[in-house]
Image (cartoon, rainbow, N blue to C red; front, side, top):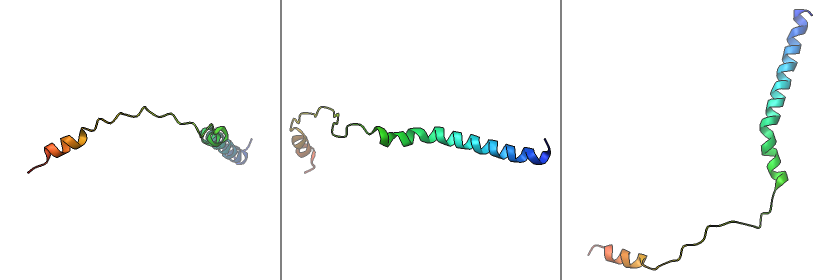
Length: 64
């Protein structure tokens, strides 16, 4: 092959590699909306029971 023919082949090869690399990186991002999942269910931590001592501590720490 001549030197003139090898340069376009290198460019095409580089473009194919870049397209494959971009597809591999973009696949997880593009797959998230497809998976979706159940949006109505949330898992929360148990709520802490309020003891009511915060106001007493706040009043006792105030300067007079």
